[in-house]
Length: 444
Image (tube, rainbow, N blue to C red):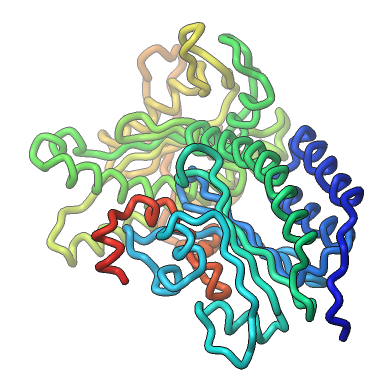
């Protein structure tokens, strides 16, 4: 193998920079941008074996997103989650932590299999044939709380030439600008999805932001509420109350945020969810049956939660769920400069009153006759007709048979906590940057 160091074409590197700019302006997501960038670097003649890039994120589940590109193998994406401030030993012995601890921008090392590795990750890279390695930290602002960390690795016998390093440092600035735009776009999407729900969040991001904007849609409706929360708030401390409320939402609400369901808003100790559908029978059946299946899951999850609470010497959490179907207004309401995106209309009032009736009947789930009619051959118990406040016609109230056993989490979203190699640790550089000098000495 030749040990001559090849020169890198500045013309081709400029083309990569131009592509980054156009990709960022086009609004490409972070994964598309990173993959396209790495492939174009390789096509420009850089003998890269591996590229790793990590971005700190403001996200309810993940502290960071990590991307690893391997020549000829494509891109791997992982989400990293913190565990109550506990630092991974592999992170504390990584080049990244060394950079952060010593406030360095870059770290370069030639890798020699005959020499003991300075960092554990070098053992893995040496097995891949890597000869030269360069890590970097690139903040998006004045500190390292938001930014990009990464590394370049080559298996060229000559390692990185000065022209390669110069080209990587230049392109790194372009990459930081492009990825910051993608991260901010992802941040906006994360926040909209977290606080408004998927469909509503997309509508707002697409420009539906004026008061009164929205649509009239047909949907299966769900209203749920925790019983006894006022007494719990008065007799328990704040932490116990909030912890109990979160346990309740984790158990009962999660099934209604999947398979077409969207939780529109949390209302104190309750929530409202919708399953939008077209205005014909087939779609209404799909929506109502999905909502009923979620009610089965929610009931089973609550039973499991209460069994765990009983083992801990805690009382049961009781609840009520109302199920209905109808036309609702789906859009913005509020002040001109302070809006909420939710559902409104008589059908919402009806499902709320159905949920309230669970206090009268010994059943935790109640549904309207219209809803039950779309659910096929299910066992329903007709409880009678109720005159609801504000509703002209009496509503026939039914309760479903919830005795069937169901798998609790068969459609639960995957949680990615694994660490694929020594460098792809849970990216806790935000926490590491905040450690005091004394804390670092204790860790070392």
